[in-house]
Length: 128
Image (tube, rainbow, N blue to C red):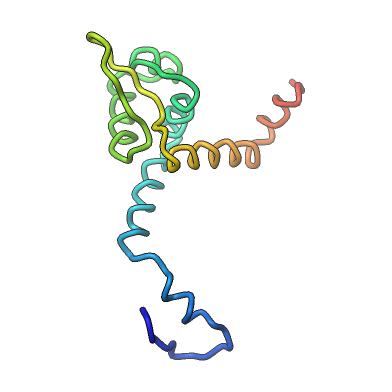
């Protein structure tokens, strides 16, 4: 977008910033990641996998969902690059990816839960 002048001059210098704006494809990639986290169950599964490595059966028990439903969410999270898996014999174990992207989303979830969920903050302080 270099050398682009805007139709209205409001006294800002945004034109210079536009030269450094990421591409539309970059923003689409970010939107795809946010879309993966647009489901509360998926966020919960991702959060769990940031704290442990588990198989589908145990994840299903932890989040009180069917194994096929959990498997669907795991597939989505894996396609977004937020989790990884490893096979040990017949069992497949999942955990959060060790990427900066996954760590950032984990921190963001923790921060938003603390900010948006007063009952969580009260439990942290020891209040029933």
